[in-house]
Image (cartoon, rainbow, N blue to C red; front, side, top):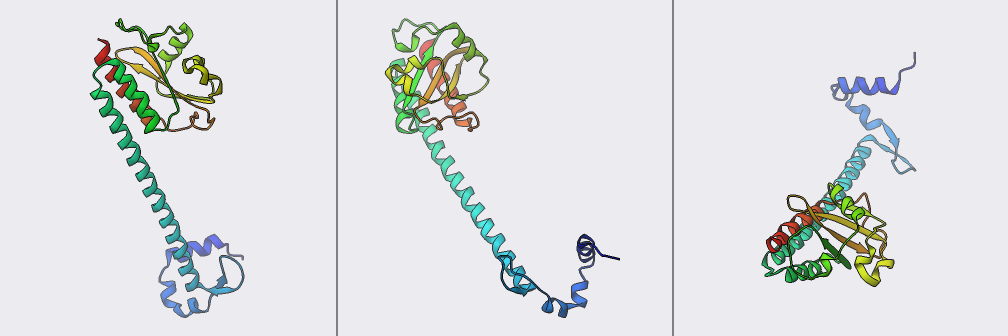
Length: 215
């Protein structure tokens, strides 16, 4: 009767005292080196396994530390832009702070914004008319939307035809009052699968700051 390897493994797992009774056997067992070549004692193989696991854990720890540092850096930038928006004395200075911080702190080369349905007498590009289709699209957004095409490329002036990726964030009070568009010539800068938590927070901060100057 042939014994299957799984049965041997199950037996040894259920009877750990086997290795106490046959301690000398462990010293005589040689198994293949994990990276080929000579056979090595089982004890040496266990040491190699522990070293490999240690290297894997160290790599994972370095990765987690890197992610933590990156998140801390992004959090600091979000904090700076929040302070800038709160300190803006009027709508024009608010928009200037928004565009400046996105460009300098977040390296977003192109930013455009449109507002509608709010009471204001100010004559700014941000209040330029937009298509009904784009307004309806903005109102359907439940979160930031990253894509390779955007109907409102004319918002970016002469740079519009060169842009290859976009992040669109609806601005809301009790309803949608506008759309914030970030863009780049890099087709991989904004893509559908990317995380959008900080884009969502940016939209919320911008919406609240704007309403202070639009009511």
